[in-house]
Length: 264
Image (tube, helix red, strand yellow):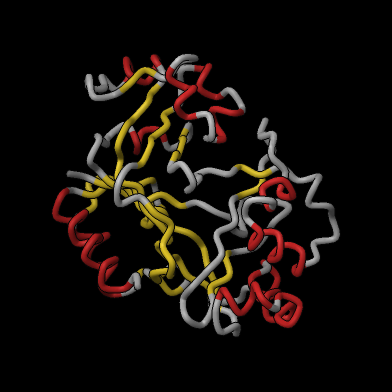
């Protein structure tokens, strides 16, 4: 058994115009906001908000001075049907098999609001506090946190990747027929799978968006217990990004144990 940790969600480095991190409330509940898209995604933030009202309330209270109808969103991973696709980080997913895990990491910041429910019930009351997640106000009090996981049920890869990575027979070829099973995934909706150069995973049992964020760093610096896991059990890293790595079985079990202790 292996696993991968992959960074998702809005952040202050590459998500213009939403230069922000995820809001985390005093009880460690949070709101997941997918990144904006300059690609072929067809869903706007406004459309996404019809099914994810918490996203709408968050972005409206931040008052970005642009219409949510004009900004497309890359809703990936999507937790309703548990799908996640990759092009740039396909090499990470290519090392996994059904039964392995993907853990999702996000950039986050604690704000002075008691809970997610309190914010959603009175969003206008906490408008000023919420602005602390914007790039200009983020300061040093941000962190990386674990926000969810998929236990992989199925893996679909384009023909080019199956040949390049010599993927096993456990992997399904991603084509027009198999893509129908993954039609809620953003990469499938924008036709990325037609290039033969993408991987999409589908999560099964134990796949979920956590109710509480699990802090693993202070700013860029890893906390003590996660540091032991990320340094001792990482088989390969995504360049200098210590928070994106492939883990062996022992590291995967340590991560699962850490999550079980902290995710309530």
